Image 1 (cartoon, rainbow, N blue to C red):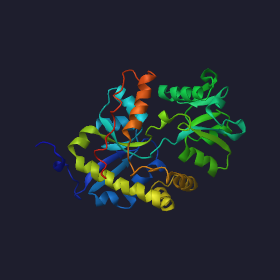
Image 2 (image 1 turned 90 degrees about the vertical axis):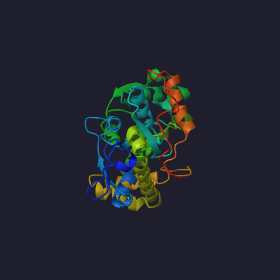
Image 3 (image 1 turned 180 degrees about the horizontal axis):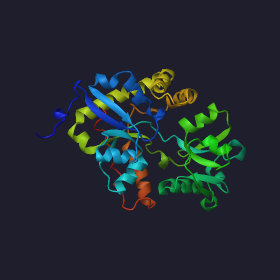
Image 4 (image 1 turned 30 degrees about the horizontal axis):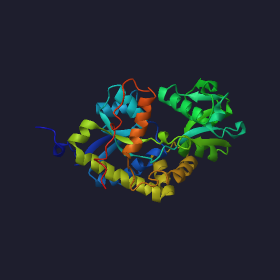
Length: 314
């Protein structure tokens, strides 16, 4: 017969199987997912969730092809996917309400704003949107972007990179890398992108769903997000306990860093939004418009595409 939502194949235990693909190795962005797993919130919603990390493919490719029904992405990655012809995924919830990323550097260099990046080595991922963002913030701060030295580098631990003198400035997430600097007692400076230009208050990271799967199984996606909402609300209210639950499931993580990061993110997951997961269409559109205006996408994006609030229930 046709595949309507009620025909979702349940496992032998009567639970609906879901594969959830992370964007990267497990970290505190993902805490609500791991809390929902540990606390039985998924099972209560009739779901059997398997958490996987992306293999050769990106999370976007895995979600787009339906290998994973849901996973973690970012607004800028969704933009890249849509331009590349993969419109088979859509954001369905914001994991963190604001863009908590920016530039970190060793404190002794005195880089307290973007202009200070002049003449220093910046560790670039060599992505057009990334470099255009750096250009925008440096110039908005009255600096000369051409004086920023681009050093291609893939960073695992930024503090190790500083200590080895591989680069001077690096794009990081405050909730992880800056907290890591605190835990390691390494003095750094940090400034956020949104302190320079609100156009950069885009959604990073988000939970994304395979479009066809969500349309055919709306109740399953809603159930998933109900469980995950409980997971993130738990992490907001009980950061220490949430950190322990994450570390129990991912023992290779540094417990001190997780605890420090969790304390920071407790106020960031929902921030001032009326509920966890809320996506503001104006903020989403403003960033896609910026990509269009700056010629950073080969074909202009529909500024209202790539997200939906249809599955996140009030």
